[in-house]
Image 1 (cartoon, rainbow, N blue to C red):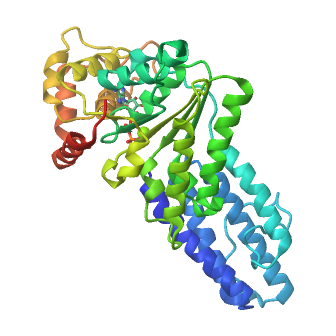
Image 2: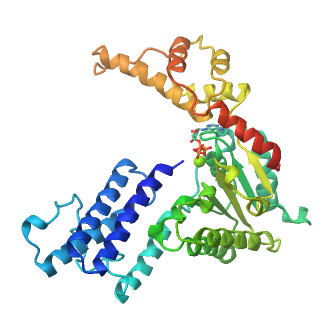
Length: 410
Ligand SMILES: Nc1ncnc2c1ncn2[C@@H]1O[C@H](COP(=O)(O)OP(=O)(O)OP(=O)(O)O)[C@@H](O)[C@H]1O
Ligand SMILES: [Mg+2]
C-alpha cells in the first residue's frame, strides 16, 4: 500500500503548478519560491521512499525546476539576498535550458521534450522480467492457486480443451501481506512468456501525463508483445483501485481513466482463442470498485489471512534457514498467531533471529572466530508475539468477508 507517497506527490505537484502559473505571469521571485517548495517536496519523497518506482521521474522534475530557478535568477539578475537557499540536488548532468515541465506552457520545445521523457519514464515503470517464485513458496491460498491454474496455466498449455474460451481477468483482493503480489509472481513464473508488472498508482501519477493515455499505452504494449512474439503475456496491475481514486482532481479525469480501462478489458475478453493476454489486478480496497469494473474480472479471489494449517506451514517455511532449538513448538506458535498475516509471520521469524544475533553482539563475542548466536526457541517467539500486534484488524477482516460474500467469483 503506497498512499503516503501519493500524498506527498500531491503537495509537490501543487507547488509545481503554482510555480508554473507564477512563472508565466512573470512573478519571478514568487515563482522561484514555489519551485523551491516543489523541489523540497520531491526530494523528501525520494528520501522517505527510496525504493519508489517514480523516484527517477521525481528527480528529473526536481532538476528541471532547479534549472528553471537558475535561468530565472540569471535572466533577472536577482540580488543575492533574494535568492532562495541552494537545494541539495546535483544537477551537473543537466543542460540549463532543458526545463521540461518547468517552462510556461506556451513553450513548444518544452512540450516536445515532455513527450520524449514521458516515453522513457513509462518504460521504466514497467518490469518485464520473470520473477523467481514457485507455487510451493506460496503457502495456503489453495482456491486462489487453483483459479489461476484453471484460467491461465491450463488454457495456455491446451487451448483446444476450452471451446467456450476462458477467463482473461482475475482480481485478487484482501488484506495487506497475505500473498497477492506473491501469487501473481508465482503465476508469471509458471508461464513461458512475459510478465508485465506495473502499479496503478504510478500510472495515475500527474508527472506522467494523462492517465488514460498511460493505460492505453500499457495495454498496447502488452498486445504487441503477445502478437509479435507469439508468447503469453501476463499483465499484473497492483493497487488497481487507484485507477478509480480521487487523486485525479481534474474534472472528468477519473471517468475517462475508468472508461479507458473498461474498453481495454473488453478488448482482451472479446479476443480470439489465440490471444494469450491475461490481466491480474490486485487491491486492498475491493469495495471501491464498481460493478462495471468487477464484471470484467470473471474470477474474483479473496486472498485471506492464513488459517491454522497455513500458519504452521509459514512458521516452518520461515524458520527453515534459522538455527532452531530441537523442541520448537510450531503448532503452538501457529495457534498464538491467529489473526496475523503471512508477512507478519515472516517478520516475526526475522525479529526472533535479530534478537539472538543482537545478544551475541551485546556479549562482545560476535567478532571472535567461530562464534554463533544461540538457537532460537519457543519462548523467543512467544515474547516477540506479545510485543508485536497483527497488522490487520478484526474490523478490516469483517469488511473483506462482507464484500466477499457478495462479490467473490471462484
Ligand atoms: N501466502 C504466503 N505464503 C508465503 N509467504 C507469504 C504469503 N503471503 C505473503 N507472504 C510473505 O509476505 C510478503 C508480502 O506479501 P505480498 O507482497 O504478496 O502481500 P500482498 O497481499 O500483495 O500485500 P499488499 O496488499 O500490501 O500489496 C511476501 O513477499 C512473502 O514473503
Ligand atoms: Mg501487493
